[in-house]
Image 1 (cartoon, helix red, strand yellow):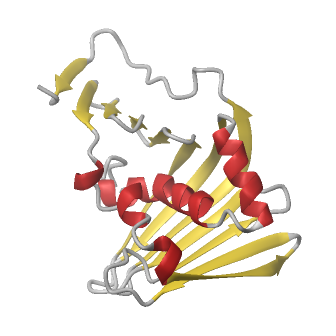
Image 2: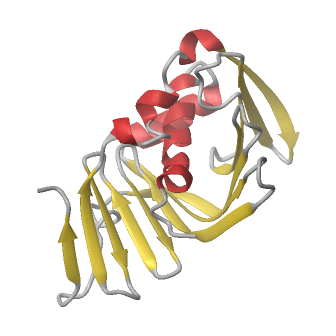
Length: 206
């Protein structure tokens, strides 16, 4: 799976924004939101699975992720993606090629703006203890225009996300699990994309 597939990659970033903005009334998520607002970056290994209920097929990817309040970076296989809210950059090591494009929320099926539509009025929120000091937040809606009908987010006692599972109206399931997650101070280097000087650059912004 190519890591710049919008419908797979962007969900990680979007669900963090979704959870931190919607669930501010919950103490644990107040702390999570504060960490992002203070400029901290969540870093973790991840395993990502998309189950297509129509075909019965499952697509998976693994790698490393860094998530900030406005930016995110994914590293998987021989590709690396960096999005800063305005621009998307993808470096393909095998082809030694960098693709630069404008990032448009309107063209992104998992854009934060779409995830947040109707959040306050259509979603119900429940919280329960999941054992070992973990907390599970469950978001549910019956809104026909919502992107997901149910989202389950598990965090540990240190406010580090452990997993995110999302279900849509077509019964597709998107599961992301994090390994060795921790928050880092962003010193301005975490979202830099490094590539060789001889890399082919394809800039689609013009």
